Image 1 (cartoon, rainbow, N blue to C red):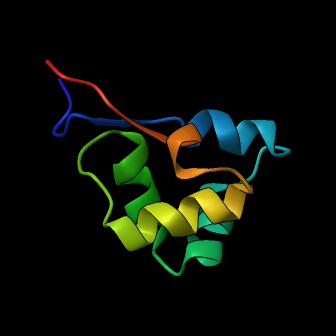
Image 2 (cartoon, rainbow, N blue to C red):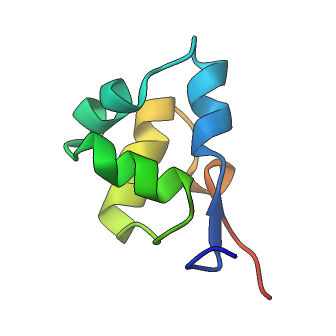
Length: 71
């Protein structure tokens, strides 16, 4: 079970972008690699600002990265 109802496709998007590393994404978003690891694992939901930064790093809309999954 994940810690938040906000699911994401960060891992899939990283691999679709030439196997972008967690560190490369973290650097692009101004966070640590540990933050990206925790987000991918669904341990917490990002702030709105970070969600937009991640979407922008992938060149997609926020809805293509994050979605709400009700229990």
